[in-house]
Length: 380
Image 1 (spheres, rainbow, N blue to C red):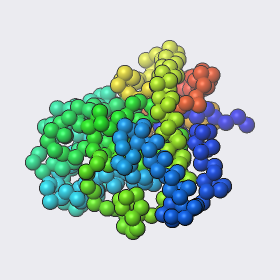
Image 2: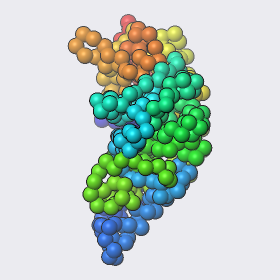
Image 3: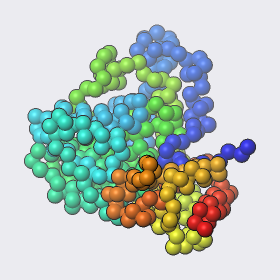
Image 4: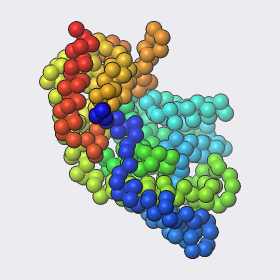
């Protein structure tokens, strides 16, 4: 049986072969504890520090500004809770966008229970925050702004550099969740003006269960995990050497191949969109501005279908994600599409296709055929 074509790279990515090669010695041979000063510990300690530099190089920062975590969710939790709890004496107001990942929204809902006030910024119909809305939302009690670099569902890239300029001018901490962006578009923390940035390995052809948080030198956070002094005393626990090595290598590869990947991913996405548009015409609706979104992400609505039913039937041929979920007799629209004010008649048929570095042109051509054939069958 042939495997279905994978067009869900925003959900997770397979491990890069170079990443596997870099990890292998730490699976088979190098087992030492990086906190040990013996021969075995020194090997793994050096590997962790090499990986830290590889991550830093991708982000354009210093190695000592990188803390390894268990993934994007932990990084977001540490950034937001860490700033909030360390600065509650200064204020209790936090600004985020309405289309953040649950790993940001749920953290903020928790902080609301602790007395923090959260402003949820609206987005336009392309999924982008208005910079002037950020400025208007700032109060004397604002201590943190958190706006994702790019959206996981529609791919919209936010005006992070402009927001960073405002945040820096007002002396407000600024965090961005860049899990979806790394390896797809340039991300330089100095140019963006962020104080904190989250990344997740499994969106970057590294393993699941590993991530990192950039913390600008001088920024202090309330510690989330207490114990020994690993990660410069910022995150206790014996380092996940195997996966840290994998993340480091993935970042090195991402930086090396970034320019060619941007071009190729854009071409594949355009081919997919044009192929569907040419045949289905007004029966599909584009849910983002392709010029302002990640080069690999295509979110489109199909007229007259329920997305999760559609992709369930498509699953044997093409793997994708739905923007709406069926529950009993109701259809729940994603919070992102709701915030973008996509009409329900379209939103319930929203499907996200995301291509990756392994996607071939032939797979795109075959995907178009499978998608079109199923759509015609479903709407007869």
